[in-house]
Image 1 (cartoon, one colour):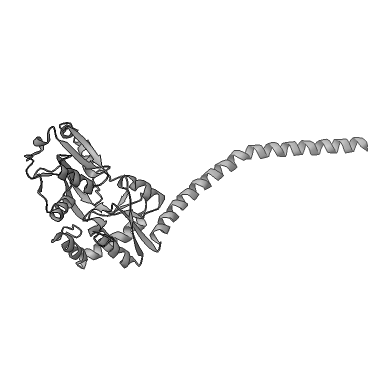
Image 2 (cartoon, helix red, strand yellow; image 1 turned 180 degrees about the vertical axis):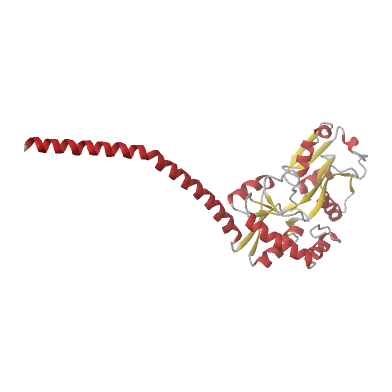
Length: 286
């Protein structure tokens, strides 16, 4: 009897050992399943995040508050501008509360990635940034140009040789000059400034010889300041403005694009453009 008990115990021990070994062999398969489920969960989470962004009660637009006439602080202390007027109209049509969020231009990507803003809408150049954002269709054409004092003697790009040229940090003008290294190397100095209001003050004081910037903004600044500045005939680069969303946020982009096209069809874009520029400079539907 004692031998039978010992034999039975040995058989049970062997079975348990075999069962444990079998369990260890199955572990990698379980790990692979977990990895696949994790990848699927990440994809689902990204889709849900994009969808959630488009369904928020607010529409938060990131803009440079020193970039008239696209977005700036008005005489009454309120945020105003061509782009902000368009964005507010889109928000109203989407049934969302409009939030104008001023940002540091060189921190715009961080603001967008963190979700602090829903889009960048502020004379935002598509050219050269095509793959960095999910874009609306272009709504406006623009050029990068050079602004100089009327009595500076600077008439052509060749005359900029040996001169001090200023651009806004992380601007399209800065990017265009990096691409046109041959021209930039002729300057005495190419320096950056946080905003174009400062750049114009530098130009007025003679601290710089030239400012490279958006033509739309340059024309507005010259008109408002009633100063003796001129825009050189030769442009640095042609470009288009669009609304930039976080990469992959197609849901919100599509909603905004639909409203922009409706605003073009019913004349709202034309009306807002004439308010700020005296003519229709928009390109949607044309």
